[in-house]
Image 1 (cartoon, rainbow, N blue to C red):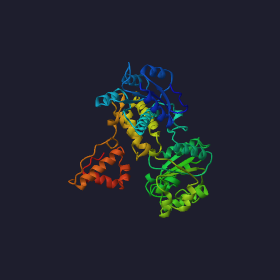
Image 2: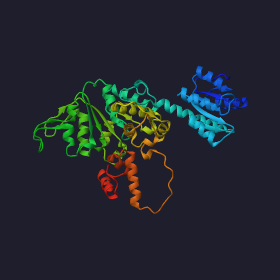
Image 3: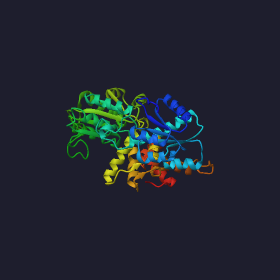
Image 4: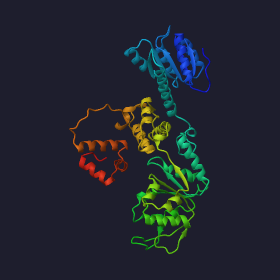
Length: 451
C-alpha cells in the first residue's frame, strides 16, 4: 500500500494488476492527489472503513469479489465518495450496468493519461456539487444575515459592507438586476450605528415623474391640487436612519439638481415650503446601469455621480459566483419547503450540474423563482432536470428550415425569453430591448399567450 500525500483529495485505486496500480498511482500523484492502492475488494473495504476516501477508481474484473460489487457498496454506504470504473473488457452492457449501479465515470483500457485525469476531475466535481448543495448551518454559507454564498467575489462584497457600515459616507451599489443590491443596502444599515432608526427603500423608477419630488421631499398643504394635508416625504421619514434609492439613474436632470442640494446642504425643501427642513440621513443609492456612460451622454450629472460614488460596491452576477449557485439553490429549496410544510426534496446530480452551467441572466432572483416553481410542483422526494424550465434543459439540434415565417421565429423567441424569466413581462421586455407596452402588443399580435 502506498503512502498518501497529505492535504489533497484522496483516491483509492483498486486493481489486481501491479503494473496498472503503479502507472495510475504515479500519474495521479503527479497531479497532486493523495493515492492509496490495493489489489482487491477485501483490502479496499478495509481502507474505506478506516480512511475518508473522495474517489474510488476500480477495475471491473477483480478476483473473488467483482468491482461492480464494490461500486454498489460505495453507493449504498458512502454518499460522499464517488467511483470511476475501469475495464479491459469493454461492452455496452458493462458500461450501462456500471453507471446504473452508481459509477460516475467508465473508462476502457487502454486509456490515455488525459482520459484518466478528465474522468477523475468530472467525478470529483460531481461529488463537490453534491456536498455544496447539502444542508449546512446558516453560519457556514454567509457571514452576514440574509446572505448565502462564500465565493471570493462575495467575500469582497462582505468586506465592503463592513467598511461602509463603519461610516456615514454615501454608498453607490452597482450590479445587474436580481443580484441583491437592496440586500446589500439593508446589511449596511443594520450593521451600522443607525440600525435602530428607519430604513426606507425607494424605487426611483417606479414613481411617476409628476409625483417623485413630492414623494421624496414631501409637500405642504395646498401646494398643488389634491394636497389637502401636509405630508412628509421619504427623506424626512428616514431621518436618523438610511434612505435607499434604487434605480437612481431614472431621476430626471431637474430632480438630480434638487437631490444634489440635499446631499450638499443636508436639508430638503418640501413642495410648497419656503424654508428647508434639516435631515440626518445616510444615503445609499443603487443602479444596474453604468453611470459613467450616462454622464458622458449628459443624462446624469457628473457632480452628482461623484457625490454618490464615495464608497462604491459592485455586486457580482450569479454566473461569476461559482458554486454559490448550489448553496442558494439548497437555501431556497429549504425556504419554500418550510412554507409548504413539506420535507426538503433532494436535488439530483444532473439538476445540480445544470444549475452550475446555466448563465442566469436574471441572477439570484431568477434562481429563487425557478427553485420555488420546482419545489411547488415536485411530486416525489427528488427533483430532477425535467422539472426545470425548457430553456435550461438540453435540446437536440433541430433540422434547419427556411420555410418558417418571421412571425413564427419571433413568437418562438419571445416564448423562450418569457420562460427564462418565469413569465415576468418587465424583465422579458428588458432582455428583448423593448418596453412593456410594446411587449404586450407583440404578445397579442403574435398570438402568444399573455401570462
